[in-house]
Length: 370
Image (tube, rainbow, N blue to C red; front, side, top):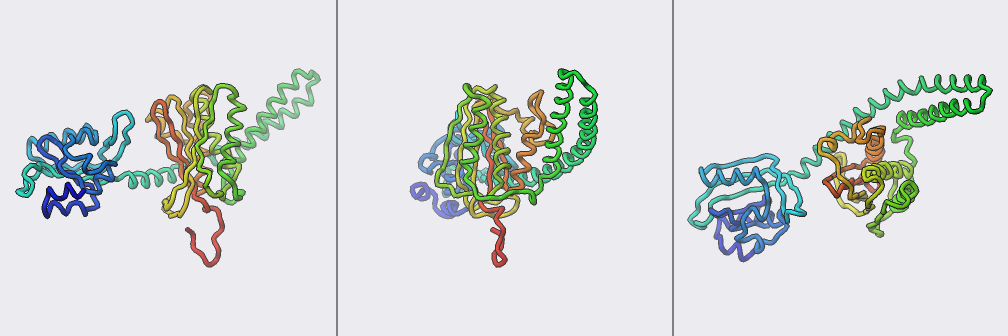
């Protein structure tokens, strides 16, 4: 960075101390200068950025058009929530940022034609998305509870009628049909009960290893897809134990992983990855330590329009799906004060479940929550 700063005396040399990412461009849209914040944003050193065309550093059709207009017409430009991709085209990462482009002429640096200021807003978008998910989950939970109430009462009548009919039947082959009715009514009754009582008070919190839960889920998947599905592990074995409801976490990971396996027709790879995350904010609360569990598959991916509504109740991507698997998973994760995020493209879908380490641990009378 020192080499670049020498080329620009004050006040331009002072740009390195700004928190915003600053790029100075020449008439050919080549980088003349990048401050420290820009180096961090673009994940490249100033020496590596110097003299490179901007389209090699980051790619954005919207931004490219704005730069062309700014140069041609000497216009300023301000863009909100501009999407760019940094890094190599085949594996570049998408970023969202606010951007200001200002044409300039400085006697201190006559080659500079434009000043570009970039402010990342990914964290702000993430916080807004979490708030929307919480509101959506509250509405979904109320809808599900009302629906479960309406279904639960007739189920008791159906089961009772099937029992009475079974007593009147002398043919054992016909009694098999009544048994099917009774068993399915019991199954639906159990599902309705789960939908009616997913409250935090019902959580059975205990200290447990998240890896033990993932191994249990992996065993269940291999029983369902014994020969065609590969389960890969990428664990951070140094992770501490988590305070959580074991059965609920099994259901969360199983619902997500089973969806992935079914989307691939049971043929492909699913990776379970665990990592730690420090000083995270979840649902407007700050936690010192959280555990990230990523469930990654190499399937066909999730369509953008469906990804926006896949956590809604009774919305399914399969003709025979119930549309409750991801809704329940999201509900259980939120009861643990965690979050679920999804990124997807053909060949790679990642569900990231972030769980605070001790969110369910009762706070002592003399201590405040984390």
